[in-house]
Image (cartoon, rainbow, N blue to C red):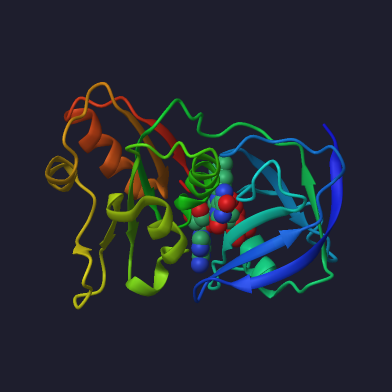
Length: 223
Ligand SMILES: Cc1cc2nc3c(=O)[nH]c(=O)nc-3n(C[C@H](O)[C@H](O)[C@H](O)COP(=O)(O)OP(=O)(O)OC[C@H]3O[C@@H](n4cnc5c(N)ncnc54)[C@H](O)[C@@H]3O)c2cc1C
C-alpha cells in the first residue's frame, strides 16, 4: 500500500467545528466517490496517528478535498487538523471502500456522516443522475448543517433537515426514528438506503429501517 505526502493548499471553515481542506493530488491517484483513506498530520508526534476520512472531491478534480469535523474537547487528530494551516503536510494512503453506491435511493446522514454522500451526490449531479434520490440530514443545531446551499441546489425539495437540540429551528425537530422515516419516506422495498453517522444515530436509524422492511448500506463513523 502506497503512502503520499501532500500539502494543504486551502483550508476553509464550513461550520464552527468543520473545515474543508483542499490538498495536492498525487499524479494518477484513483478513488471512487464514497471511498475513504487513512490520513495523518505530519507534525512532530502525530505522524503515526492515522484516522479514516472520506474524499469529497470528484475523481476528475485535479486536487483532493476532505471535509473534517474537529472534536475540540479531545486531544486527537481531528483537533490537530482543525488547527492545521495552509502549507502543512499530511500523509494519506490508498483509497478503500466504504459505502458502495448501488443506484438512486434515500441517503440518511448524521453530522459528519454526510461526507461519503457529498462525494456521491456531487458525482451524480455531474452525470445528471440525481433522479429521485433523497437526503435526510440530521444535526444537533442549524449551525451544524454542512454545505446547506450546495445540497439544496443538488436535491431541491428532496433535501430534508432534522434538528435534535434547537427548539426554534424551522426544520423538522427531533431524531430520525421509525416514526419519522415512515412519515417522510413513501416506500421501503425496491429502494436503496444508505446510512452514515455516529454509533447511536446508526443504531436508531438502522433499527427503524429494518422494522420498515428496508435493507440499508451502512457506515458507522464512531463507535
Ligand atoms: C470510513 C470512515 C470515514 C470517515 N470519514 C470522515 C470524514 O470524511 N470526515 C469526518 O469529519 N470524519 C470522518 N470519519 C470519522 C473520523 O475518522 C473520526 O472523527 C476521527 O477518527 C476521530 O479522530 P480523533 O483522533 O480526533 O479522535 P480519536 O482519538 O480517534 O478518538 C475517537 C473516539 O474518542 C472518543 N472521544 C471523542 N471525544 C472525546 C472526548 N472529549 N473525550 C474522550 N473521548 C472522546 C469517541 O468515542 C470517538 O469515537 C470517518 C470514519 C470512518 C470510519
